[in-house]
Image (tube, rainbow, N blue to C red; front, side, top):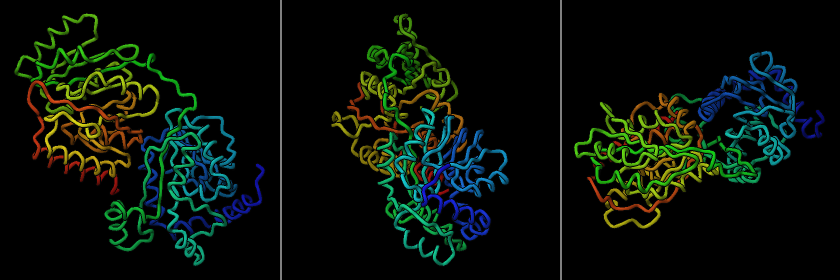
Length: 476
């Protein structure tokens, strides 16, 4: 491994650091404990992980991946990591020229980009070792903290580092875009890196996540996914399932079937009925018998209640590669569903959320108070999920079946708290770092049946969900 003089200087310094690594980490124990918690939060599914700049191996070991590889420029650090964490592989190597033939699900860079001579080249190499559905996770210091950290090094409170790029978060995101990545989420954490009884916990857990305040935080992070340069649509390769929850929607059943286009190589429609009393079930069964050429299924919701339960039951028996939810009131035109399918097939998004708040609505489509509440919750959830979401309660949501199964596997993290199902899916998608995209729709008036949203009771429930999301996604 041939290194430039600057890199050799860094390698020698970290060789010396390896001899006293416990001492240096101990001086910043609060910081490293928080950093470890953040890394575990950002990598919820650590199957195959490679860490560039792995140091003495603590972060890789904390993730406990099924396959873990650490690359570090310091041979002293590599030897120390091998002694401490023999269950993983550690190699001496340059993050700008890694000799890796395998593919990994996660590339992790913790406090590394400031030490790189060529961040662009390192990101290009990282792109090459990521699997198609992989993620790169980059964590570094907020450039606003440069004077404080330099002073800490001068006072021997922090390990001395000879060379650092103090890159603002926007510059890191720009370099990711230039090297073939799409940013999924980004954010900032930690206001107080030193332990002060109660105060450090209060600042880091309760104050640091707040809007505007978070710009002053010490830690910055970005999660991004690789994009293929030769992306081709897979529309003809993928099948599709449209789940349609119903309750007293008899007058909309025929149009739901007639107006839903065929998509991909096969389209399946699944009606899940929540104990209708207006003849909806009989109408569904009649229309199924009249359309033998279409793949239409019906299942009763039984003892289950709410849209969330209905959607889960539909998704459980779904056979399509792409899963869709279509509200049976048809206020979202079924004719628009191919747009969602195409975005998923082209890889431009991994979770598509319909948005009713862009185009003008028909007069009675949404009441004024509902519209105000939807704007508010859209802003709140954009902040919570660290991705732009304008309309959290639009019933149309689309994702790959494989991704839904991962959300279902991780449901215990949030619990069964959501009668609508929208937040269960949004929280789960954000937790797995899926790329969430809003797609505007033209929202129509209901032509049959009654609105099932109770504005004030459900509004209170939505506020409770925001607080729940704050605790699970921000205050950890």
